[in-house]
Length: 604
Ligand code: HEM
Image 1 (cartoon, rainbow, N blue to C red):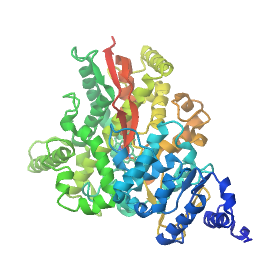
Image 2: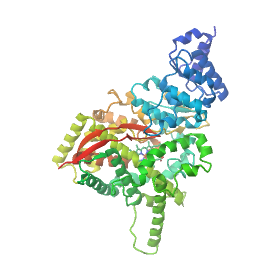
Image 3: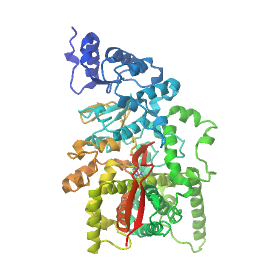
Image 4: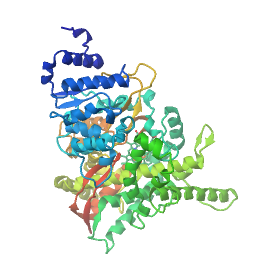
């Protein structure tokens, strides 16, 4: 019998797995004892062809027995008949696994569609549309269903490897799911390059978010980031203006025609956040609050559009064929549109042009007020002493509205939903607000950011807990291990050069080692209040706003909005929840679907 021991080296997964397969081939009777088999890091040293052969072999030996079988090669999945054979075998792979792999944006992307089909439907989909299986580029979409699946109790946890080893989504893309692994991925300056799916023009010119190279990103971030986004500047320059918006928002809700009326509160919070963004960008908000509506359907278009956006960047066929043809005129938003993302871009362009006119007048000595908004910082920004051009400025403005409006709105809506649907939590929050109010610790008419943090610790804990449990951007943000070099080791796992590494907030923020011992899929604000030391440790594991050099630019702004509007809603209104909706992760973003439907009644 072959001696396998020389190839068996703990932690050295490749020889280990290779050896294991040889053992199974030699002694197929042992395969009946195998319950689950997942290839990990198996591709190193193999070409695609070899991988396919290895998979064939694996499926032959293990396909009939194991409950969870994960082949190694995923490219050209549609051309691999053995996969269908495995899928249709009696002992099929774990359905959640197949969901994860075989599930595309088509099934999963659009709101309102039925829940993800099990592998039967997935298999049918491949039969009819094998070209959908361009996994090399579409892979990332599929992890969305992990977030969704997680809500369907019991489906996903068992696909994680107990020892924390990464889950391979495609041959060169690894998903890490332990919170302790995050720092090694996102704080490593050598890996601050984003994967190639960000390099596309389907969504316009490069912005902070789509800049892939570490150096280019650093320069752009330095130019358009900076102290503007610090908590100190935001408080000094913008908090009073945000107060005005909150007062308007509250006034709308208190109008006789509105008081006691059924509303979708989570949509109203998004409208508020959208106006904060447009105000911070251009000084004068675009009217979401003033007109008490989703102006030009921008929020709606954003939610619907992210599925297309996801498809455009991840599906090579879409990106390279469809969007390079005339068809793109029918698919992508246009500046001539009267609504949605097209209108957003057109309005952004008008704001920029209007600003140039005003600055020219100022240059001629006319009386024009000074601006201290984001647009002004983009006009003043320099990269290597060169100003940005207007296309770059517009890309920046568009990105900020998209990145900061509905995301923060979802953060607000989800926090209110979780508080309102947990009666004990709600009672504690109300009591905390009432006590602080009675002591005169909360400003009137609008609570200040610092006051909530200092005097409403339980409410602050609710916000953190909501951001942990229901992150508004449950997306995959990949970083690249330098293609040349020795690769990298994370948590003891060797990662080959050229690998894309990523994580997912929904998954990682349920890691019991980081956020336990309380059940991590439950809303327990108390976990943040046990001790400062524990709370700081958990904060270090939070991935909701990303981490490292590409951490969210608007994190402090989003937190400020949440620490102001949430207490204001709860102290100004009685709230009857008519339909709580559900947290829905879709196309890389999340929102409440169909929404948090409530009746607000003004309190004296
Ligand atoms: C609760 C609300 C928000 C959440 C959950 C959130 C989440 C995130 C995450 C996870 C990233 C990191 C992406 C990566 O690693 O590549 C990010 C980046 C970014 N966010 Fe936010 N964000 C929020 C609000 C905002 C706001 C209000 C703004 C407005 C300024 C904003 C602007 C940005 C920008 C510009 C980036 C790209 C930063 C870079 O690559 O340098 N976000 N956000």
